[in-house]
Image (cartoon, rainbow, N blue to C red):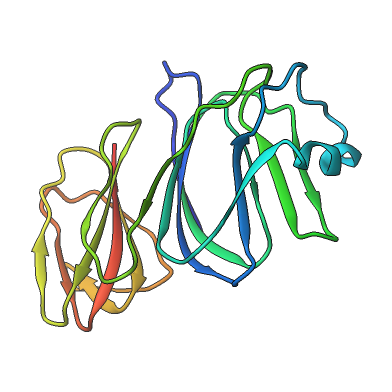
Length: 204
């Protein structure tokens, strides 16, 4: 599943983050490059295998969180289920391909990758935890755990998204379930959990 947060028109680039829900034992993700790239990334999908050797690969596990800055080349390997929250900000991509034999998807979020990419912010916050994942970026993101019967009044001063990852409950009487994404427009919505639950809460 993925969630998209729309652009602020004055911005340039694409910022995004991932929360990994499930990952098979050998699953890998790649963020950034291990050496500076000396030429622009090419358009041809046939070159994915050649570019993959320069990507900084790392093991993936459930509960990992990554913030991927604009201008970062990245790759998501096979066997991974994740939530992606992003702000699209009008940046042209030079590379977006898929190698079906390896289950590898590579994408560049910059038009000209001639320098080593900035490292992504990485945390490990498994389900059952609560805490801020991102508060210094184009949007805010928090992971929260609720027990059955808990109720949460949200003060919504802008745009906010409620993304349930586990459990069942209601928002002002409307039932929510894991796997959904809710855009909260009410100024003070009441979120209740009917069972143990975890959710992401995104704001701009």
